[in-house]
Length: 83
Ligand SMILES: [Zn+2]
Ligand SMILES: [Zn+2]
Image 1 (tube, rainbow, N blue to C red):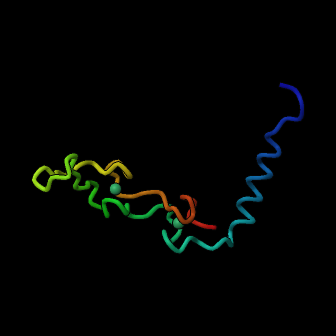
Image 2: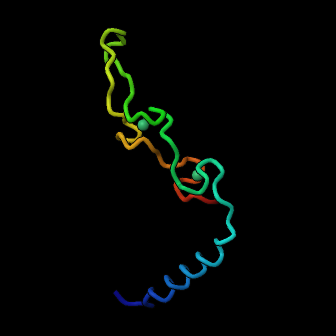
């Protein structure tokens, strides 16, 4: 503890964030949503994966990238939705 309390600085930063970022262009990849369709499973939430590389053993597995949520954080804007 000790030193200058930080809440005031945090509020100022938040206000500057809101005012200064209002004209920030939205991310074109995710259209400002901050996420995009999972590229690995292409929105199906599962991937065909074979532990033995045997076509007969291929079975759908829960997508490890999105954990079945079908979306992944936009890599272009790192999930913020804008630049
Ligand atoms: Zn996925
Ligand atoms: Zn994006």
